[in-house]
Image 1 (tube, helix red, strand yellow):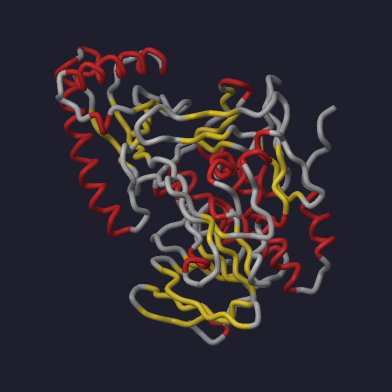
Image 2 (image 1 turned 30 degrees about the vertical axis):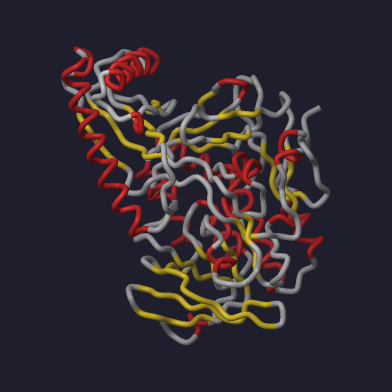
Length: 419
């Protein structure tokens, strides 16, 4: 690193979808932005755990075509991802829309956006420490490819997904005794079924039989086909993990080995148990287990479950959402609580602003929210919105713009509420 690189205007911690939106928004407003990402590639959980579907970008409803919550960067990102994935939005139950996507397309789009915006990205890099004084974060320590370095950013945006900045200080974080269950995404090829419905029906029947006959562990009873991913006689599936999983890379490597062995065993069982699956083959297995939630930063406002389910609105809103509260339990089926039809809730700017440090923002899965609230707000469409807003607000403070000006800039991207 050269001297200028150690003093970025904005440091974005985490290269997932929220971090990408934040970095691009800040550089578009003439901030020198550095991003650190612990993996060797961008995308966060969208690529490392391969979520498979981008949810939360669209208004709910039964119109023939979906409508975006937010235009500008969010809509452009989703449109480009749909084109590069050769996919269209899918209309699901209760008026929900989502976009199935290709992992390679997400990687390519992320790399292109970061490069075109001139974001300096350090991969294989972890945040290891920071110093605070006078209500600001003064410096941060990082480890990049084993080399330690100190940076002096003027503003920090935590898009880590696990409150990386707050966990290194003595400030309060929002935690839960029980976080949501994680999931492993994988691909099965040679399914020999005509459609998603018949494939899911046959699969579930044989899985139940395998569990009853004690061939398959009850830990792996929850396997579901990811809607919209059935293509060319193959599909992606989500295996719900029945026990807590660490988000730490070293611990995940051990868990990955256990789960990969289990998937091999389940595949062999299905091949022998069903004529529909005689040629079944394991394909891609996501490099990481999909950890849905973890510790979150505490902001000036904490988004609540009641805010979500009652569709609470805010004059300082920077994001809108209508995705249900989708809580994945360890030992029972997921729990869904839907908003009223055609309603939505709003996330205020105070939920992405630190209540302790004037130069710290956060976005994505690490925004200031209760566990049941983040069960809705963690989806990628909302992460894009909160990330974009964090980038605008950080760059605005950097250049001395008023908060009201930046709020008007962000809110101008939202269409008027439908009548």
